[in-house]
Length: 164
Image (cartoon, rainbow, N blue to C red; front, side, top):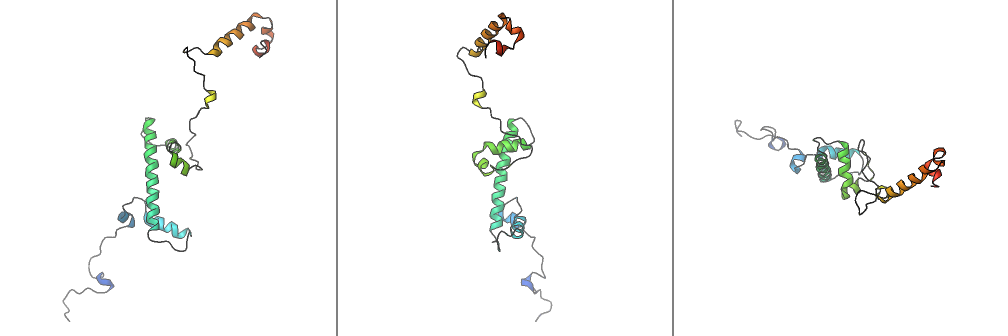
């Protein structure tokens, strides 16, 4: 046996040579979300006795996709309101205006998000064919003219004198 030869010793030949640089599971999967942290949370959360190797990768990929989708919609909402920074209001508008994500996050309350702008159609003024004049304006003028001609209008309110 030669003593001067470069024989690899122990541990599958890794001890004597240079080590390879470690590659994380997130990089292997092509993800930005941390696969190892998701795996740790799955194990420590006691959701099951054992966790497969693919489960945290899949879960991290789903979480990354949902985050990217919400951020894209929130960015669009920010751009619509001529802002450069996404605020909780933009996130809320993005979630509630998207049908599928809104259904997924139906029970979620976003702090500082506010509410969706909605006006009941009954409360909106009625549209007329003539343009700006509303039919209620003519009735209001007629009632006010009748009430101003009576002596009771000084003692009583408008509604009482006109039997409204």
